[in-house]
Image 1 (cartoon, helix red, strand yellow):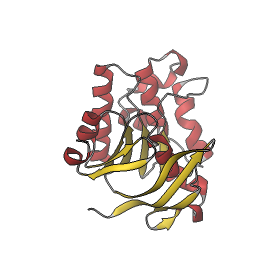
Image 2 (cartoon, rainbow, N blue to C red):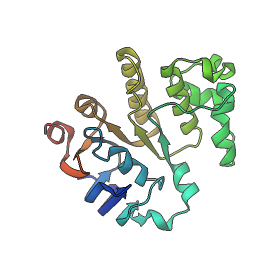
Image 3 (cartoon, one colour):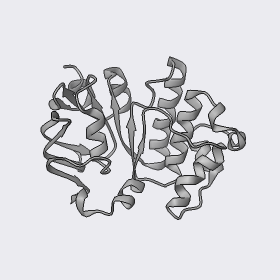
Length: 223
């Protein structure tokens, strides 16, 4: 297996008294990783552990060999940036949305560049974010994340609300980004075929938050 980017050791997390992840141990390598499984298997919870949007009840999560609890949480979230399942944009223009997070991080966003990386031309900068299609809004979310210059993207089912054409377009954008910027990502999906298309390594979860299989997608997503 390639060098781990994230390591999870005996991670257990419960919500409202129900176990979501149970004594889960796995390594997630650099590059493109998919976390696959049905609804209720803890995929999104696992993703949120990686940049401390959630913390385990027991166990350890390591990023580049360091316990994430020892890292500055805001710095971690800027380096390991979540793109949520559904767009959550601010009122106002696309440019305002792209600049917002970067400004909080003390960065000056190159709006034209990150829009281009996300597959949108510069004319989108002045558009009202609320009037875009869901697919366009998802790309703005991606541009906003890229403005932080992250090393890792956490992608929580980013194409689940899109039609087939938009899904293929966003997938191609992500693959192009990986080639151009050398980004790593962890992609949560319930779609085994998407996992095989988008990742070099896959972890498959079962209901109850346990691992069914892990390895190259052709093997790991067969179960």
